[in-house]
Image (cartoon, rainbow, N blue to C red; front, side, top):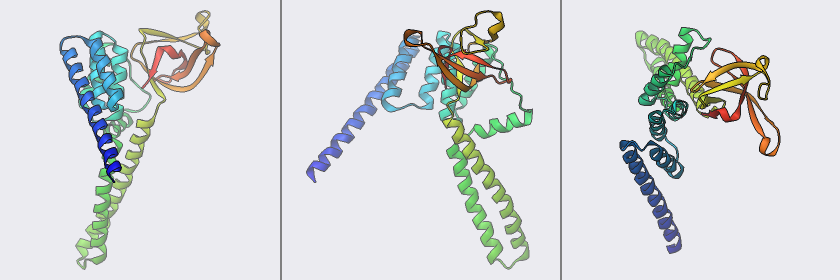
Amino acid sequence: MMSRRLIYALVLSVLGTIAINAQDLIKSANAAYEKDEFERAIELYSKAAQEQGTSSELYYNIGNAHYRLGNMGEAILYYERALKLDPSNGDARTNLEFVKEKINVDTASGDSYFSSKLMRMITGQSSNTWAVISVVLFLAFVAALLIYIFMDNIMLRKIGFFGGGIVLVMMIATLSFSFVCRNQARNTSYAIVTVPSSTLSTSPRIPKDKTEEAFLLNEGYKVQIVDSVKTGEGENAMSWYDVTTSDGHRAWIKGSDIVII
């Protein structure tokens, strides 16, 4: 028993030390940020993320530091990562929209205004939030069902029947929203252009002439990865991604020009 307790004590001590070190790193990173030492702040925030795990707040801070350095693509990348972990992070969403507008990144899609608003409303909350709402609605449905079954009053039975039906539909909807948000959080098919500009190609190779150039994407654009290939060998090896843009254009981009969210 003593040896087991000793092991538990050692484990707790190590975990406590890691947590303290991570907090010290964050404090040091915050101090570096306040001194306008943004590269140092990024280094410390990233190290804290490695030691204690990533978080929406850490990604948000890294995004802010990249913005202050003028790395707009990297700033957008980390704001996107912050929202991927916590869609309700209003500061990250506000800064993301601000940077996109500042560098004139076109985020228009082919979706209708209503569907875009609906999707933004759904993905504005985490999957856990929608799951909790679903549980609450389920309990309300059970209560309505019990009212319908056991109450003698006709009006109450009608309320239980129709109210239960409405709550059931809402529960199914919020449960679906939870799955949508969970799948989005696990989705690794989106990436951000992090170089000043990238010339996309009609095939997975550097364009030989204008006829092989598809179009140009500037820093900060978000693309969806459809496929990927590797060309060359050894030092000449290069990754290429077949991507689509928000407006439906599709072409190949160098792997070094984008970073997956």
